[in-house]
Image (cartoon, rainbow over all chains, first blue to last red; front, side, top):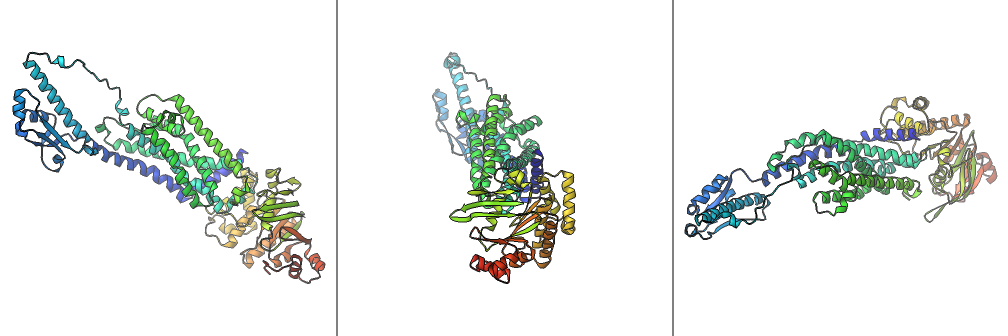
Length: 378
Length: 244
């Protein structure tokens, strides 16, 4: 019984390893994605973070020399040119008079708030202006013999519990997702080749006319596809391990490091997902009559894990996603990489469900292959 | 020994097999002769348990295929139409794979593979991948796969299609050799010549039914014709779908 499964599996692996298309499909994804992600993050970080010296176009700067000096200490300088034009600080012409009289002097910040790249800079300028305003206010109160603390009935202190790693939730989510998704991509071509491809080449009928059960056949194909999926995951983890440190995470105040411990955890957590991916892909491809047909079905089906994992990482998802296949694993891994403890309970249930669905699909497939309609595509 | 009893099978709207009964004995070459669409391939697939009959049953060495498929298939070798080669494997790997699937140990499978490769004079192509093989080379590979595990029963579906003279001779010699060794050989064909030359017994099929059974000699006598071809046409009542 096991000897036949082993014989079948060995043939599947030899056959697959000689299939350029199957091998390259996994390879391209595993090597390309981490590099692409790193490049993307580097560009993103450069755009999102405010530069050290922020040039701002200041109108009527000469009316408020003290404010300008204060801003200058914060690295916000009066500048000109295209970059400075995007953020304009307009100081009203009656600024010195109003200041002298102890009234509110008007300053206007002109910028495009919908420009994602400018968000950080706008906030920085606003914060600096508010700080200056508070300082001036305190000075005015002191000049009138009043303790400035009367204006602060509440003293709010913020204890930020976020570890540096927990801040980049979304970016982490995307990075983790691309790794977990590799188990879906790496084995896909093999899954099609060994099912729809086998039927297309007329070898399925021959294989079934030999003394093997459809159960043995399904198990061996499942193991072969899972092996390819896991190889893809190992590869993408290795590449990520070396590629992610190249991104200047420090500018965002957190870092993603793919440590050997995390890689190990990911492999353990990824195994049930790989088995689910394999059984799902085999099940769908065996229903298709040709390679091409299977490909178009799978493209649609593969959208489900994509949607599950993505919604889990964007925090827009209902709680229930914590317990479901793919999204459960994704969330558990995110917790870990954020430096929190592994949610054992959720992960165990999500993994159990994952394996259960894989087993149901495999059983259904073994039963399906006993039907002449499926084997001959009648 | 292959025995088919009262098998009926409907595929879609077509009654492919209709109360078909016959047997093929050990040490004999039995030909399943019929025009295109007579139900030959359907019949062979039913014997292999790939199709389930609506009625009746098929037995291999006394084992019901539908009830004990794995045990029954253990005693069968199939030369299918189309061949179903794995193009990325070499003939040696391909043949050894099927030998192992039939329960042979690694060592025994390798030895049996080497033997059958030399028997079919395939040593020159044994370690080349099947991709790009000629029709004759493909035929030999498929044939080796069918006999490597020495099954008592060998079934061939249209074995001579697309073969040149040399390949046909290799095939014919092998079938005669198998018969002498006491195997039961059953093959389907619509080619008169090879049936007349090889078969001890001919089962003439038309419209999913047995039209006549007997040696080529008997069929001629039964119909009062001098050639098998004439006898055949008279038996099935038409000359449609026959190759001389």
